[in-house]
Amino acid sequence: MPGDGATSPKRPVQVALAADAAFAMPLAVTLTSLALTHRRNELAITVLHDGLSRSDVARVEEGPSAELDLSWRRVEPAEVAGAHFSTFLTRASLFRLLLPQILPDLTRVIYLDCDTVVTGSLQGLWEADLGGLPVGAVRDAGSPFAAGPLGTEWRRLGLEPDMPYFNTGVLALALEEWRATDLSARTLGLLRARRPRWGDQDGLNAILRGRWRELSRAWNLQTADATGEGLAWALWREDVERASADPAVVHFTERAKPWHATCPHPYASQWRAVLEESGWRGRRPGDHRSLGRRAVARAALARRAFAAGRLRGS
Image: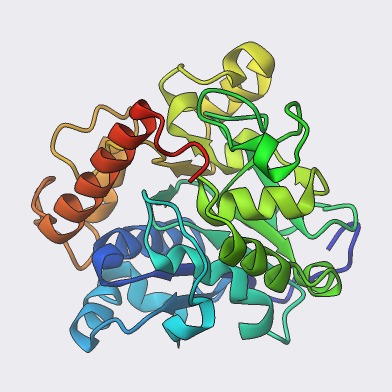
């Protein structure tokens, strides 16, 4: 791999995702999108989970996903016990912190959230030169800096307000560099000692303190960029224009998800087209009640708490 020798052309691109039962359907869509955008055997995929049922696994593996090289790895909740995770997410979001030890023989892996749809090849992300840093990522569309209306609690974490702040939904991880800095244990330690607003995203940003490689927004086109509401349009217009026109990964970062019937996202129809290729074909937006009710209720509580100022100092 250019710059850090992480791979060779003959080796498959290593991809990892994490999910629980509530996210089985979005997981299926992300995997289906990977199958539709890559050749057979081009990818090797690891799915971290906390006990998906056999029926869910079988359904995820239907359709184009049946052609993928998939490995299922169960994570015991005790491995992340006591670590705080964002109110908007589930405990499975913490599993990405365990990738270096779960995949001890790998030197590089691409991590994807399950609310993403892949629209182009990941080869360029796989080959990205991370410059000896443990993480390659895209700045958060809502909070490109530590300070801001939706930013982290930078004073409590001892961060500079203008520190670049990344989104953890799409990550290129240089695992040897990650292991050398004991990043997993340090981040989990912070999350057990504190309750930062955005969970492990805050934790990783706080531990790394800017020691990460910034990547093109095309690798993680977040909702605020796609809808023209993100600061990137003012700060990095050329990059966000290119990314919006031709993204490699679309990340549905806001409350409205493409599995909600009223989602206004410009790429929602593309997500739903991939859904129709998956084991959940025929599922109408809004039908995914377990995810819809739970996630929307949690998000509503968090928004009310945020508006009331209760999250400050929590």
